[in-house]
Image (cartoon, rainbow, N blue to C red; front, side, top):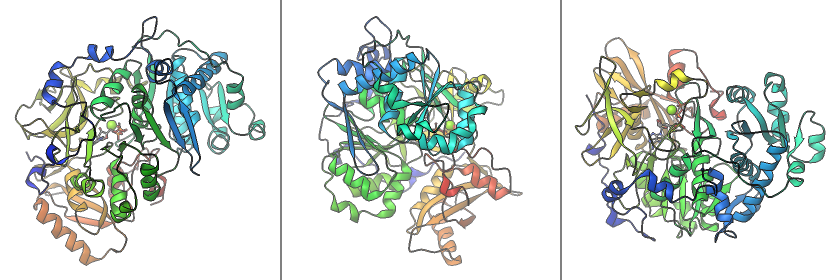
Length: 598
Ligand code: ATP
Ligand code: MG
């Protein structure tokens, strides 16, 4: 079977000696750290509730508000227009107490679901933490969802409360009310006049203003439900993954080792809380460390981002491959206009990070981009490139302390077998038992059970592991192309195409073929200054063939204005395939809108 051939390509490892440390990394000796690690000890780095138990909101906010970090800046919000709103830990504690009291007054209790449909505004964050204090379950919805995805998720999640803005409510939710009989209260953010005109709703600000800012977090068992997160819908209908309060142990630990949080850090996670990254790392993990998090309400804009990094003195930055690719498109010249000296660590998640992007980071920022891997189901980072370790561009890195990862293959008798030899392709599997492991897919017991076999959690991703324990992403099991007896991961083909000067984005699928089973077909969008032509197509085919060899290189290339992606920026290969084959397009609730019409 074919394995990834990154190592045969021209991407030299970035040794640790070439990388500058401004602080001593939290993880210095990988082997030792893994050996000495235990989840019990990790749990002891947190405080726990005064009467026993464990609650995310206490670890993230209240224990700092009661201690030395009381006046430290917890969250800094930057609105689309550039206005700043700051919350210290003490203020965040008081505001979230108010929201917990609001819920209590409304009669919302333990385990009941509180949904939020809003952009990255302070009320979203206050609602999230206040909900956890009340031991209700926080469920974020991405603000760009249309009415149907909202209805679908709120019915699956049996939402009792919805917090949203008056304008989103008018445009998207009002029409759904009769379809959501379980929804008891809708709290709107807006002016009293706006809200007055919307029957069956309550005024968020008014309720908050009259609520007490003292609240004692309710008794919380570490196994109590805390978060409901829907997956990105890249491979099919989104699943509602359930997480418990104990997950905070993993949020905290992975923030420490994989994102290298230090007390003076100013952290910026660019993900929206509508996706799991925006909650686990956009809200919880940095707060548990008592550091400052930046939240930008606006969407990607290279110049805005660089000026934020500069003006807010960001030290640790967590972003995604699509954003990196967009920055690459803009080029490195513009970065020279900014002073980004404070930035010391960059990480990326959500999709494979093409090796070219890792190296581009080094050129653009003087810092490589550290890829890490995890899923909605895992609740936190599982495999990462660390500050103190050699980076092998194209690799996701090595498992976190406390995480056992393996490559497994499926036997004909439906059992799984761990592959011990290096560089062999198989499904990435994790040994269950870490605290942020999902506890089920809501209402989909069967789908949940299918994720486990032989004592392993099967991730649905294919990968290889090299002899030094670095994991290399091949593709999602559903996306892998079987051509003339070879298994081909679309990621390696896309990454090779991306190295061509004209290519901005690439999406690769397998197209049924009577002889080969499937042939590789690529959809390519071009950088500005290039336009589609037969000549360019031939050039690209030849270029890919030289890099990848005849078996792996695409046989067909189509030019497209953009590659369809989820709203969280993941390439939707299933949609490219459905369109190519004229099949039903399936669940499109998470499709990015600018690709919707194409
Ligand atoms: P769905 O499960 O609904 O199809 P999804 O898998 O995209 O959607 P998420 O949980 O948001 O939903 O994404 C996790 C997946 O994203 C991983 O299983 C993997 O396929 C991909 N992924 C995340 N990080 C990386 C990475 N660093 N390298 C490669 N793939 C990654
Ligand atoms: Mg998935």
